[in-house]
Amino acid sequence: MPVRTGEFADANTDMGPHTGDVGKLAARVESARRRGRGTLSNASGRYEPTARIAFDDGWQSLEELPPFSTTVSVDSTRKIITRNQSPDIPFDRSINPYRGCEHGCVYCFARPTHAYLGLSPGLDFESKLFVKPDAPALLEKELSARGYSPRTIAIGTNTDPYQPIERKYQVMRGILEVLERAGHPVGIVTKSALVLRDLDILSRMAERNLVKVALSVTTLDPKLARVMEPRAATPARRLETLRQLSAAGVPTMVMVAPIIPAINDAEIERILDAAAIAGVKGAGHVILRLPLELRDLFREWLEENFPDRVNHVFKLIRDMRGGKDYDAKFGARMTGTGPYAWMIGRRFETACAKLGLNQNKISLTTAHFSAPRPRAEQLSLFG
Image 1 (tube, rainbow, N blue to C red):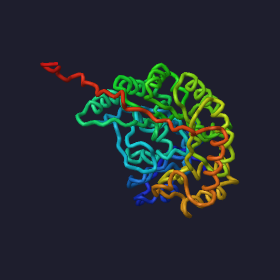
Image 2 (cartoon, rainbow, N blue to C red):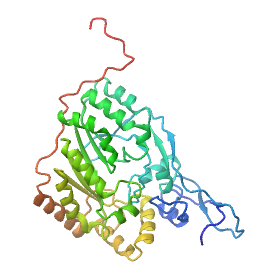
Image 3 (tube, one colour):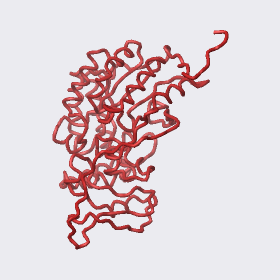
């Protein structure tokens, strides 16, 4: 029954790590309140002792809840470079200028991280955002630390550094300015045409072999993109962004990610072909991942937009995840296992070979690195 009262009830439920309980309690938010958003509900995160869900109590109150609007809070983090030891990814350090992402991609594997903040991985993730305004200064400090050894920093691996609020806060541009001055290599992943704003910096860094940029192109169908990643750039704009970056001499890649069985897997070859025409030299792919709360959020989205495919999609997902909805094992979580995952991998490799993609690895250099001098550092007496 549609929610009319806007009232909530506390369900004293043991949330624990069992995200299935969250999914059962989640009430879908009225479409008018979530217009332009990716997910359908706003269930409490897995660490919350209670769940608050909207329901119709029969009083037929005229009270209306407001639409979800984007709010931005300051994240006063003390460190900006995050380290990892995952064997599945080709970098050991990354930077995330923002928490949460307004693009609203329904499949985003970073959604469950909002639970660490006491917020929902659902609509909260795409509407309650956090900015790290001190990121450039923190980065400069960390690069200047004694014993720092430079390696490529990845940006955009969790939330998009060029999401819409970057237009106002310009944290990413500040980070690039620090990296350019220090001669430090960086790899960027985004879905946004806003990256072209920084083409001046990127082209200069490219001349010194300090940068590469990958754009994720999930579909060429604008209607599918609209419901799957509602506030990201259209597929056509992403391809045009790749073209302009390539024309400016910036090494570019296309990420066909995520590949969702029975939703966008038929487009692999077409996406790669369009990206090659745009001038990209490299490509990668990732199979859909559904960790923690994301599973229920994605199922809700399927039931709303592709009700006839829900069971089929999840059967194929389980075929690639050892019978599970998700398998976090290193070595398999990005590409999956089994015949269906094998077929996707071979299609991808065959298309890349035909188009001449991935013939040469894009390797960046650390030869230009010079640790920045902290602004507060006293000059040496003897130079």
